[in-house]
View 1 (cartoon, one colour):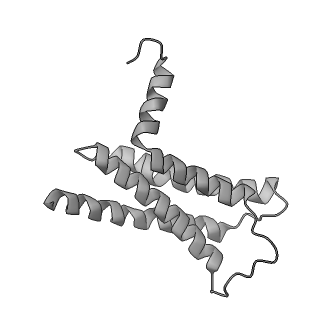
View 2 (cartoon, rainbow, N blue to C red):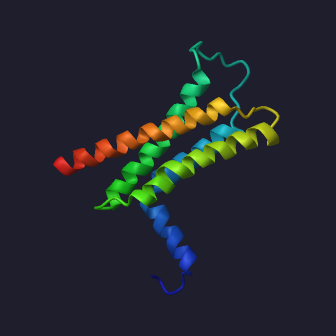
Length: 139
């Protein structure tokens, strides 16, 4: 540890160095969920449940990136850490974002089914992580 860093700074720098893509994905989810508003003249394709698919992909992708960066830096899997940081924390984040959208914005609404789509995306990312682990073990 560098002598001028506090323990908190050292831990934060270590997290940023190990998980830069995960942090970027999380920041992007917050930006897209709270502040980004597509222009009204933008015509979105008429795909059933497009909003739910978007939530599913955003959270599944983010959790997959967390898994992949975790596997890149750890030889063994700590199931508790992965449960807390690669599944539960993103699911809770999705719930918080839905509450913020419903209570603190005028252009967004908080929807329970969006939260469910977030949780399903996070859950299916576990399969991506476990599949990547098996592939890396063979290679």
